Length: 125
Length: 331
Image (cartoon, rainbow over all chains, first blue to last red; front, side, top):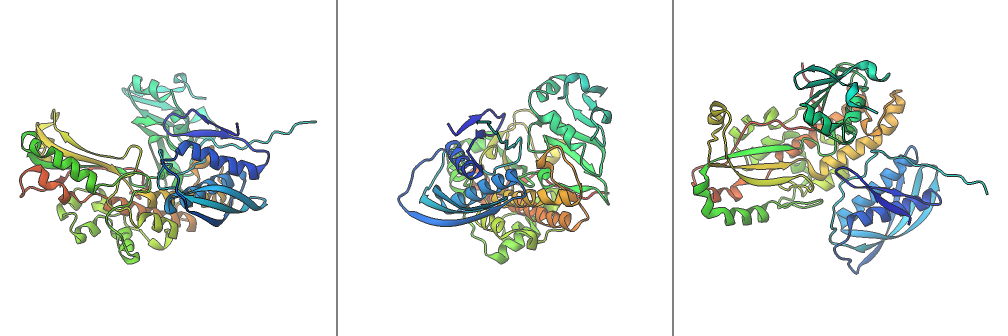
């Protein structure tokens, strides 16, 4: 499992993993979607270009997820497929395919830095 | 790790953690709570968050938490600090996401008996006229110029728009407007999120409820507010909606670099800040004031459900109140 919800006293929190930062970004979106639930999925589809940056991997992740949230809530869509076109340091460009999505079970207002830590695990093979 | 043993009982219902508890504390931390509330506060991350607020550059006096302390983002909920001018900081994470959220108390002259026949109508009217939820849109669609006026004028805009009275203004903190707002420091995205959200509630702990006054503890104060046992009041909890959230998001993100530029080290990234009198600090303050004014203006038009409260000549009146999630200058 690439992500799992973890306990939080008032809001929602999750742990997510990926083989690299690109995969982490995409899996984190899936984790957010899992927390939000989905009331219904529409038929329409569109492709959008996203560009996000941060000063480190944590800020990139937060900014990326908040960008996704804004896109989805303002345009009532769900980001379904991702193509990371460029990941240069802490700057990412991505192509995102969206589908109409009029509602969610749990609205997420923002992603925060609270208790956020990205750790790398290196294994000797 | 903070435990009960780290606290000193300074007085009845006042507990303090001395500045020497941690090297980066600049002032002591103080919690107003009885022992039961103290034990509850120690069950989550709120006390360590209180200690963290004592590390902010320029903090003076004590880093304080009120009896409603519980875990927040950066600051604990119920946390209050003062930073000196000049040189002290302003913190978008400290102010928080729902800028200037608060509870508004509206008092009616009607008794429960007078209102009871209309409760169904009031409930229907509330549902129809008070949209709520993340991203919920209201009935007002503001142009750029109108939104600018809301951001600069706050509750005064409501008076001009006919949805509030001058008496409401007199009973609102800061008379419903924080000076220093400058909409040029509010991002297009924040404007886009807030443009259609006036008159709406958010999700989570936002609410609007119709209350019966069951018991009056202080007759003299209640009389001045027009409150009596058995009458009906309305409480509304809301704030600056998507606009305030976006302002906070924008500046928490931007200040991740700013703290490095000013050589500020913090124990929690949600506490990012800038010197209040710096270019960056002032930019956030101008935007924060806009979001605060948006929150002041963000209240359902009570005329829509006032008829349910019986007498047509009686308006719902705003009782004096204090809001939270803002940073003010004080002498």
